[in-house]
Length: 261
Image (tube, rainbow, N blue to C red):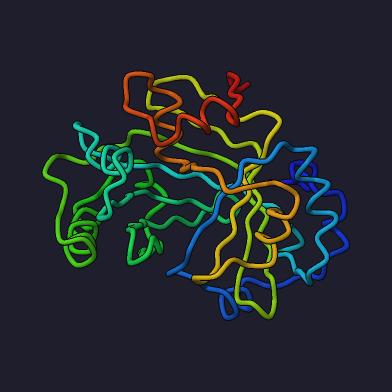
């Protein structure tokens, strides 16, 4: 079970809670603009503690931090990765996402829509199938991609990367946006060792076309968005043979990876 000790903000317990149903009603944001930041833990603790905009924290069954597990799928030629690496507009990601604490899984297809907006579509998925695509799952992926980007992967889709982390979610009432704080981010390729991001968190804001109040707070303190994708940047970090120019700055300056225990 997740613990508050994993979260880099000392006063989370002071924030009023929001339930999942209300959070989704106010800021579902399946179509949204994501802005991601890799922030040193000590800096994140200070900036989140001094954020003065009204915020509420997702709470379920008394917990405020939750374990996530995602398995990403790609072809043998890494078509999905290469579309991201070369900045193609019709790019996509295919993954299962498991909410570890509840044991609930989804199969998700994320595509880039107009003006870099991210569109996420998903269906419930069996926990036992989280690391493979069933026939039904593959049909869903193909239908979704055909409708969203007009193409489907030519090769067999297989797991290429797994990510694990603890997530805290904030709702920012009045502006329809939310933010997530991910700690203990870990990457692992199939049959390889795990690597964990040390001394930093990944903070992500999710809003409409305009920046939200948390973005402006970060910018005012010199924190700018990072070019990072848990899938693509993770692949680039763990495989030196892949083209990684889009994430070179992030890999060189922000990602301090150590072998996971």
